[in-house]
Image 1 (cartoon, rainbow, N blue to C red):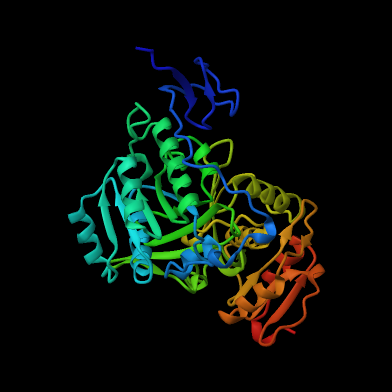
Image 2 (cartoon, rainbow, N blue to C red; image 1 turned 180 degrees about the vertical axis):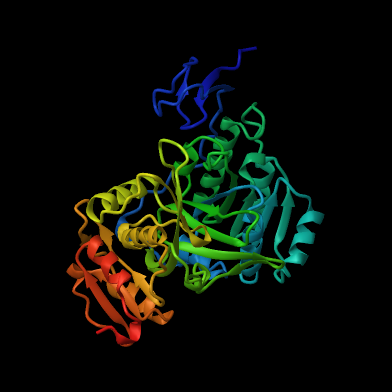
Length: 450
């Protein structure tokens, strides 16, 4: 009998090598090469059909709504036939709950097959009763990839949900379930099935302790869309982000709240991220997530350092950006921060990745240092440069209207923005961070500002 050929596969990027290497030449990761038997790829049943671009019809590629507007938003407006989406998240974050609710809405107008390799049919039934599922979806509790694909073909399902990809096992690979070869083979076969049949395939993937989806990085290249479900499992707020989407934007964000009956959509997240407290060290800004404006509250806490080097800790704000803002505040606004530990947090576990929140972060730090709260009903928008100047940000009018909708009657913004006035709102243009701090320090109530 011929000896089975083995290869070494990188667990990070999927690079294959005939011999072991300490460092992967593709991704430069150390000690990630895993020995596995070479997987025999099943040839296609028939050749591809060559078509002209002008002959391709898009009538069958209409978006399919999941019944959850927040999920549709992140997916690019809905699901497309033949689409393969990978949903990742920490254990217990609510991935299965979210997909069960989506399957409930989809099963009322389409055929949905829910495949679970982790739970029995009785356990799925109990969860469906807790979520008050009304649709009659198909269930299959199986870990064999071949049986899953056979069941999907026989049921002629429109949507196939696989929970989770790490439990799938194929006879083509001799390694254990969850290994690099098994996960990659299962994902590739499910993707081939989706493209051949036009079935929407939703795959659940576990994440590692570093927050990346378990398995080779090549999984994210195989599928069409990669979604991450984030949040503190001990809190109710959940954020759904797209890190890859071939059919839509990756800037959108979906907001959910975990409750007794499953995931509840938060259609007005701006109110959720505001604490409403008027205390020193708090500032409000408006961020743009895709096409959605969202108000966010930034909080800062300063404490005398007990060591030679002060600590700089941030949650929701890039630590490198925070260090830059602190340097600008010391040099251009003459704030003494070198002997202070600085802690910055964004309420609601929200991440502010754009630079339009620079002014709010700087003002909340100045407020915490002076012990003086910012004026009530005041928000701030603007990017801070290294020379201390304030720069305008995109979609300023959209941000201002969101601030006005939630009752903020005064907004500090860069003088370069040249924004037209908005009814019921006072715009305070400033040119530098020093001027912004002075305006806030001596700012009268919003009703009397001209």
